[in-house]
Length: 148
Image (cartoon, rainbow, N blue to C red):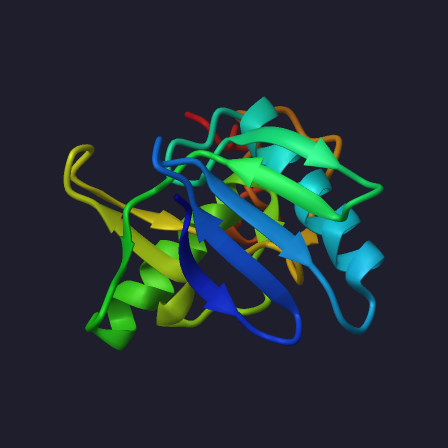
């Protein structure tokens, strides 16, 4: 039997017995939020981002996605660490746009934090290769190669 994790006006999130997370979008702009989260998760998967859930299924008619489980939500996390975790997404061409601790989980099996809930995220450079360096991390000397 699925375990309900979140039930709000915007989404219903459940974790199934096998650990898969099902998120059903509802409320204002549900179709747009569904499409955006699906697009961002595919983008991050193409770039092999190791600290986000993997999109397993996407049903545009039901406005539902199924993803892997990235652990439990973090109860307490230092503000600086929250900023660091969300900043790591920029290297993968994504700005979260809801960078709050409630969107961070911890997976004790993997020993790492994971970022979830990408419905408001922004793709910074959708065509950038997976090893691209975000513009704000490029060296000031433009003659120097950013990757050494």
